[in-house]
Image (cartoon, rainbow over all chains, first blue to last red; front, top):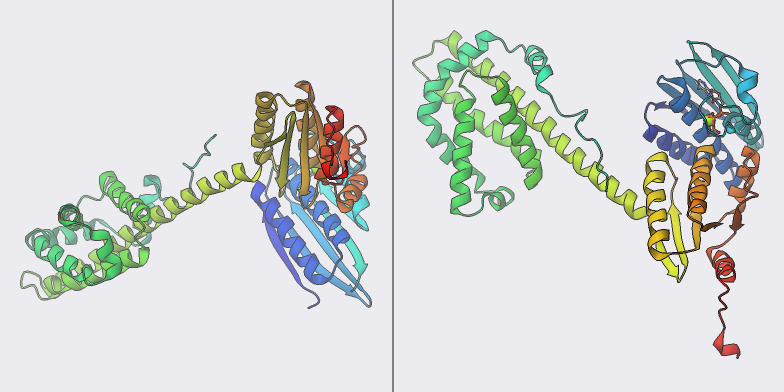
Length: 137
Length: 309
Ligand SMILES: Nc1ncnc2c1ncn2[C@@H]1O[C@H](COP(=O)(O)OP(=O)(O)OP(=O)(O)O)[C@@H](O)[C@H]1O
Ligand SMILES: [Mg+2]
């Protein structure tokens, strides 16, 4: 059951719901505990919504289950081909937003996950990768 | 209730791409000419065909059910006859297109399955083929051409009817989704001066608008100083949901009432902290029952357990 992976498009608001549902199922099945599942799904919700709201393009979520002895993990990648982020450091600051919302998404995801990396080029698109490890049951 | 936009269905064929659909099956002017050759025979035999088809349909309980009384049956037969004659009329423009779309929509509405619809076409073919290949008026090449043209036009017909059928089903689903949405965020008065709104599932943008409207309306009509929003059934809260909640709370404040958020599970509280969302200005309680207690205190209502008096 290791090395499971898959992807889901992010084109409509409904796709955000599908992404959440998918990752809730995948992480529960992989053996993550309730708290971690909720954290991961919340992060998924944030990043999928960012693609939908900010990128101005379609995107995709890719996921892969990881394993190390005694541990389970998941790696997720949110890629879009949209407007990109001019200043990544600024975007990750709590409270920074260009959309008049809370601006807490990226900073929150960073705290919810073990790691988050952002690659972005203006007018080319953005890829946000996140990883979370948990104890195997 | 606001109705959603359904006009841009991804399923329904539109007339703009019908020319392309014809090109897809290679339906050309030659085919039109071939079909016209069959037309006089179609007109001549239309009544016989329709009778044969209906007596065949009458032998199945599923179809018999739809054929109804004598009057309905007459009407259906007439419709079937003109449908059949149109097939070879040589006119395959907008009027033809619309009539085929209508067939799909009507069949979906009355609940006749595509299975029956498709097999009826097969039966049609069985009835017509002897009049093509066994017809002394057509030489072998003409018969071949007519057969091929008929096959194409029937395929085009089927595509239109089926896509219309799916579109009609799609509309039913959207309507139901909207109804479920409405039902899934009820707002109820649970005490004189207290309304409660249990939220089940995620509070997405489309739902928030509806929910907020209903909550504010109920607060006004029941003249309630306190509203309990219960989030026990919310699987997780992200920044967008939190923003929606905060907007709702502020709108309620403008009415001079107060919101108490109940059913805040530890997992949710934790993620909110991680997200850096500050709910310190908001009264929260772990359960609806404890929230109700706060509400009653605020209204200076005492509930007395009469068994302990
Ligand atoms: N995929 C993306 N493409 C383009 N810009 C992005 C993308 N993701 C984030 N951004 C930019 O980074 C900013 C910060 O994102 P973040 O998720 O932290 O806050 P937000 O989405 O504005 O508000 P919140 O997530 O709190 O509702 C956004 O306002 C936007 O300008
Ligand atoms: Mg965001």
